Amino acid sequence: MTARKAEQRSLLEARYGAAQQKPDNIIWTPQVEALLRHKSVRTFLADALPDGSIETMVAAAQSASNSSALNQWSLVAVTDVELKQRISDTVARSVPVARIPWIEEVPALLLWVADLSRGAEITKDAGKEPFVFDYLDSFLMASIDAALAAQNAAVAAESMGLGIVYLGVMRNIAKEVAEMIHLPSHSFVTFGMAVGWPDATRTSCIRPRPAQPMVLHHNRYDQGSYRVYLKDYEEAYQTFRVSQNMSAKTWLGSVIESATSMEYMGGRVKLRETVSERGFKLK
Image 1 (cartoon, helix red, strand yellow):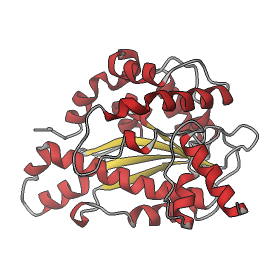
Image 2 (cartoon, one colour):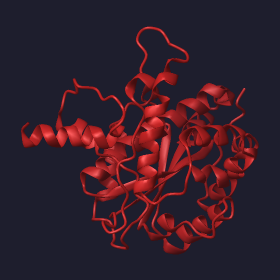
Image 3 (cartoon, helix red, strand yellow):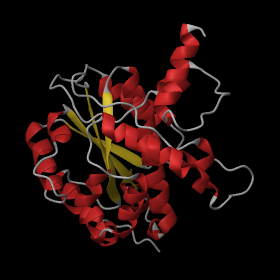
């Protein structure tokens, strides 16, 4: 086996774990390899981002597909230390922790906004009402576009040697964060992203994903077929948690908790109310 093949095999094992079956027909390109190397980073150095890095990430984000070329997303890059700390403190109060170091440590907190405010203003300037924005699909469209843009930005950041972690907890404080960054009506922070230089002495490893047959269906959805692969994925999940000195938890237990625990919801219990207050009627 060549060194290159060994490296690729090692990467697939990191992505899927030793116990699980792995695809043996991956078409390896530099982009595919970079994507397979992705890992969430929650330990950062205090070093500033390189000059131009945020602009580079935005250029990559703007190169993502977006619905009807309407450009219905925006990015608020929070680099002010005091504002970032206020956001971190507010998030921490919504979860059972005293602080969230990975928000405090990073030089930049990126807030990805589903943004119909520009469209609403342009429509009203033309003397018309943007009544279509009252419907669920408009909110969903803008949220999807923000996610597509953010993922492009994440790939760009990692290509520069930076690390990122997505922050769904921003929805815990959707109302508060909108006020802190002065969001207009018809805009909403879908999630955040911490971005900075990974601390190599504390950084995590690639987290294994389920074997492809758990998520890949051909032509028709094969309900229940995932059960055959649960045991091996649970083994990979446990091996990862032990290697990272994480608390004891099963994947099945995590799934069940996410479906039954209101504590897991954090401040998102009132999310629909907040979104409606922000101008999205969700009809």
